[in-house]
Length: 213
Image 1 (cartoon, rainbow, N blue to C red):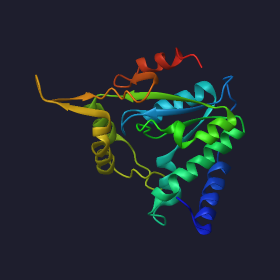
Image 2: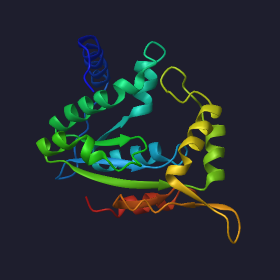
Image 3: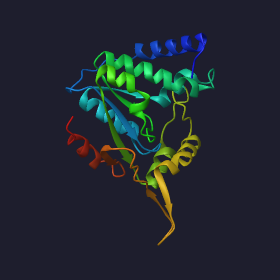
Image 4: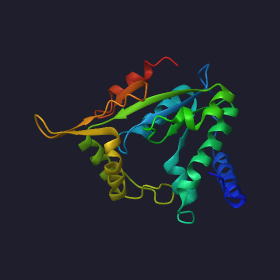
């Protein structure tokens, strides 16, 4: 989709403002990575993203934070700007030799396609991490979470649960027999480096520590 000059100028301002607040971490891996978590809201993606970023010296880039802080309420058409802004931020960080953890639900498995030219230019590798959690635990987390209405597009438990429910069919399938229940979809279109269950809050860190980067 082509953008007007005004739209492009807005994107440039958002990217500049975002990057001005980023403290560039020191990379701890030989290769550059674009790490793509996959999981519902409340599954623990942001917590996992932060842990991975600290471990390998990467920068977390959160689409919800960017949309909440820079696009609303003035730019309700945030869907127009999100991808171009993310692309520019990711490229700017990779150019500086910094790996990126793209904190959003990358369930479509199209990170390689969306960032193809950038990945090729900086020889960065895509790594998918699946983050799962018991549904009751996810809902409890959303009910207890503190929401920052100025810097997050998810502004309340109601919005969080609505978004979880909206995207549930992408991650789960409904099974009738032998009893009605949700089961995880296999997501065969994505090759995962690791599948992390954050339900108990302990074992997933050990799995990350075992990953060879």
